[in-house]
Structures are given as C-alpha cells and as structure tokens.
Amino acid sequence: MKSLVFKPGLEALRQIELYMDNLCENLFINETYYGNLIISLNTLNERLFELGQNSAVKLTYNTDHIHLSFVIEGVENQVYTSIIEDKSLNNNDITLELLNQLCDSMVIENSTITLDFEVGALHNSIYKTRVNLLKKYFKKDKINSVDV
Figure (spheres, rainbow, N blue to C red):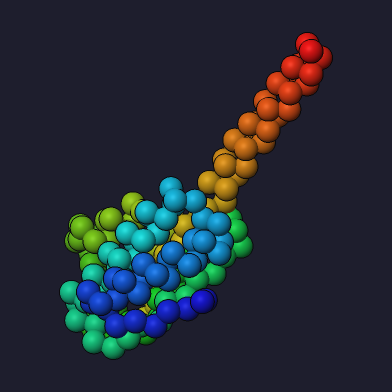
C-alpha cells in the first residue's frame, strides 16, 4: 500500500498505525525508527485536525532506502496558511518543534507537507553490527575447531 487517504482526527490514528506497520514490515525499517515515524505522522494528523482540516488528505511515501519521505497532499488553504504562518513567524508552536526534532527535514509548499527521514544511517549501522557478529562467530568457530 503506497498511499493512504484519511480524514484527520482520532479515527485516522488507527489507519496511520496500520499503514506504518505494513510499511515498516515491507521496507524492513527498524523499530528504533518506527517510533519517530509514527509519532511524526500522528502529530501531523492531530495538528491538521486542530487547524480545521475538514477534507481527507493523501499520504504517500517515497524511498531510496537512504531517505524515507512522507508527502501529505490536499491540505486545505486555511490550514496550509496557518502552518506557514506558524513556521515563518517562528511562533514556537510545539507541534512544529516536535516535527522538526523527529524528522530530518520538513518542507511546506504548494499545499503539501513533506517529512523526510534519513533511514540509511540506521540500516548501515545494523549492517555493520551484523557483519561484526558474523566475523566474531566464524573466528570463534575456527579457533574451536583447531583446538579439538
């Protein structure tokens, strides 16, 4: 499932959670990053609801396995304007501050919000850990086989 259409609000929380569960399973995204991803999308859902988004929005993702981007399209004009004003006036809105801390970049333009996460560093770290564990295992196996 590449995209999800939902109307912001409490009912959307479960839809977003199912979407993220499937996405993380299909893309082999570690649980460490899952938390940031789900909190970011749920926070954005809540903010859209608070600002009066009445129509459904479309959430899609793009990835090159180094970056994972979520694009939210269909943000209503008054909601979009409020978010832009909060960001440009540096209103210290807690929602925007939280999103800025959780994601690597956030772009707001043309009634679209894009959240970008760098997931390649995590995959690379996991890869290196697994390689080191395998090297240690095989080295130990060789030593034990010679000692016998």
